[in-house]
Length: 182
Image 1 (cartoon, rainbow, N blue to C red):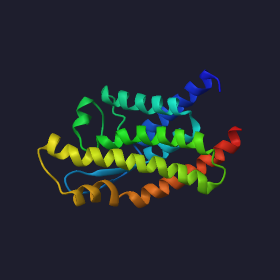
Image 2: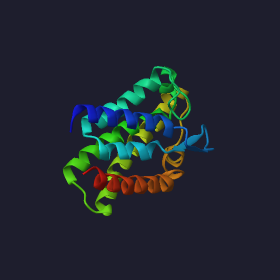
Image 3: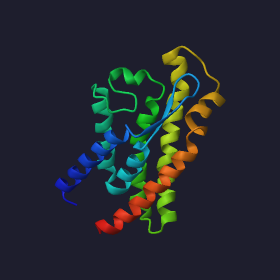
């Protein structure tokens, strides 16, 4: 694929990532609200539509733009966003997109089931990165310890069902797009 096409796709996914931050449902969980956004959809789709280096670069650019102060995250932007326990989920988008791109290239899925399995690898990486940051950031950043069960409730249980549905939808769209692109 030509580099101009790749950079154009990257720009498209960067714009979609920013816009999808504003499509959100806020869940009132203990300590701080959690957001379910369409960013997970965009990160998974990005992994299916871009080679792994470009998927990584796209999500890295998104994070960089947000840390530079532009309000592109679900709750704003700026360098202070690193101090939020939910910043791990922003980093999770980077892992998700990159892992999906790598798995897509290795597995070359054909059926929707195969696409979904690739998407689930990205979803798992999103949750691993996000929840590790969430749990360990409380004692460091908030000077408060929270029990592991509460951390997993806030960062996993309240959003896993909608996120699995979002993952499935992203995989279905990716499968359709791959047919159209080829």
